[in-house]
Length: 97
Image (cartoon, rainbow, N blue to C red; front, side, top):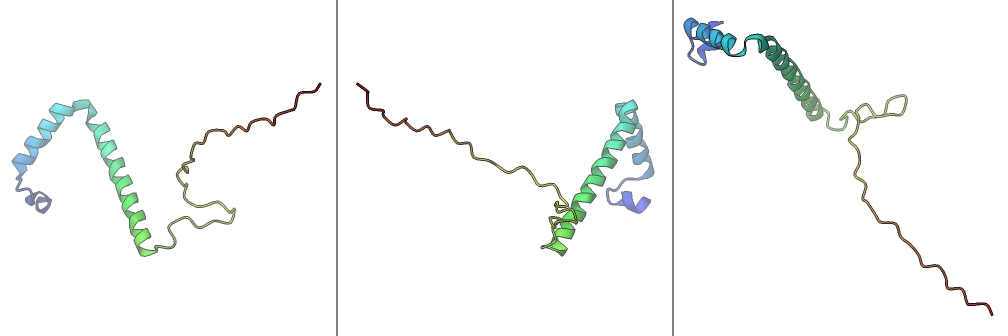
């Protein structure tokens, strides 16, 4: 454990002071912050794994159809160009006498 904090040059007393300051500042929100930190680390690891898989297998990026014919990954919506409706003039009807 000391080798992990040796990178930052922290001893046991400095770590204890940081922990006490963290408890004083964040108090009741500390478990929530830990939970959010854990979720963000998990999402980061999933993203890195997906990136590594894409680099290892560039053709199989998760878009291959399955047995049902739908792709594995959900694709983002496609942009659709907005166009104005086209109106045509009605043909001129000659006046009837």
